[in-house]
Length: 376
Image (cartoon, rainbow, N blue to C red; front, side, top):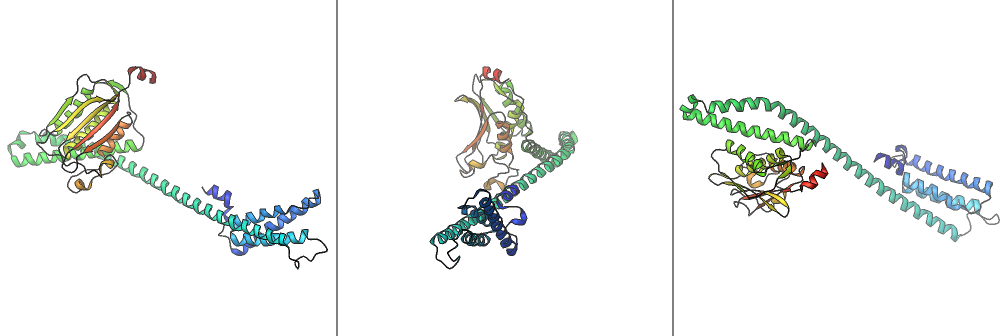
């Protein structure tokens, strides 16, 4: 953008920041150069009517130095034209000449229009330059934040895994089981450690997505295997919750990165469990519709207001009705949608409103085996 401004408005020392005296001096200098050019053309080729050459200094002065230097160049050019092309028998400045008056009006109009256009171009160029600079700054900030989150998350993951394993062993130890208070405390520590581990995993996934680190490995797989793997993960973590599975018969094979699809399902199931309470079950179903494979995760929880539905899969978005009383990062559905997108799928949410539960639909394409073979 600075190069564009330099080409249009001239080098920095010729821009409107130049002092007025220097600007007027440069304007007169351009008129002098134009006069020398006119004289050279008259001497070499004998061309007599070449007054249009004087529009050049008017344009240059108006564009590069502003309105007043442009008007000075216009008046000076008209005066020189009067001197150079006046008849010898006529007084130079004492006769009234409509032609010169029209020429002065035209040159002045050119100076006004050119200076206005140049100022508008400069203003738009500066605005665009500021916008580009702000966008670059935001991008650099995002990269730095993602790098910091990724680094800290990796450093926390190793000790947290050890803590999670130790608390699981402690929670099942006979000595702890004999003391109800210790048993409750060990269970709370294990649950909170598991929640923190899940949050760190979300941050790591977010870093992978932001850095374009997702590289799906496509292969054919069974829908039931993917659903069961995602559900079992949450059944182990939430033994007191009911997760129902309803798979339509004769479902086709899915051609996708099964690990990413499983993680997407797991994110949505985790959200459904978080925003609903026992004994209300969470239902996971799969069916085909309009040439696509649909996974539906339904709960009977807090629901989503209609105004929030278009934003539920945005990064860090959390509805006001849950942000104050339920912990979360606002990354779950965003991560799920990103995992589905790289597999050619998408995510959508429906809800009857607050307190009416939510259904999240994960849509995946069903490619023909012939198309997959051609892509391979």
